[in-house]
Length: 122
Image (cartoon, rainbow, N blue to C red):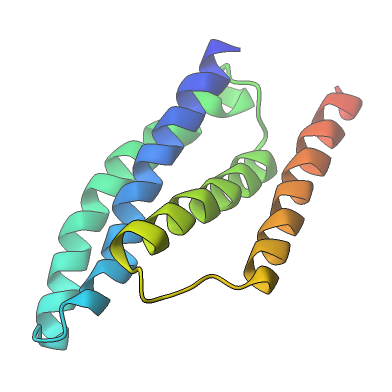
């Protein structure tokens, strides 16, 4: 259970970096595209420094409780949580719509199905 906890914590942290790498440059309209790309690459490096250990820690082949599909769907759901907070805090002019939240709920349902399916197979 602790491996799953640390995996999720690392995935959250990695998603914070990746969300900033992908979207923060949109606030910086004066930046040329080449600078946005280089800055995003630099930020993404730190995302990978957290994402790779998270996947290793959580994967069944390394003693973790999760399969690769579970790791991916959990990562996607966490991305939506981090993205929602980012949107509210950093990009307040961008409003999430009810349809966005409905789509997010479907991804969270997919996490539940994925995790349940893994336990049923075990």
